Length: 149
Image (cartoon, rainbow, N blue to C red):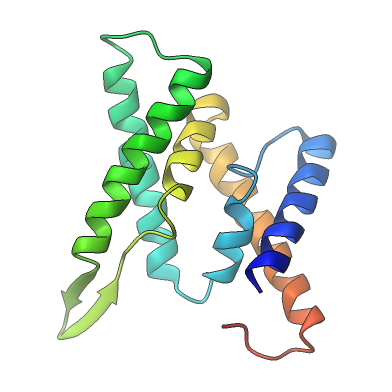
């Protein structure tokens, strides 16, 4: 299912960029988000790590020059490290119920932070959620309405 989700995500992201001009947070991001839409706390955790990564990158860019490939690598590295921390302590206890806030993958938060830096937080998050919802809808149609894993 990952192959189909990522492939559909790439196709719909390409169509989205060509028609509207806004990227959906990275080439593989919408596919992975689409697979995890039934875990909203993980999606929110991934968005939170992306925003924290963006803040760290903006702080680093005040003392060093970050652009192009260097910016991309730093976003992915910071997102990777913060995502790794959420994998160490993935559950938050709320009313005696465990809520999993671990990130989706390790590279996804950094890619999202990179695109948030380039085109803005609101544009990136909304386009990513729209494309992920479309991918999820198409996956449900392709599987005959069965629940996705």
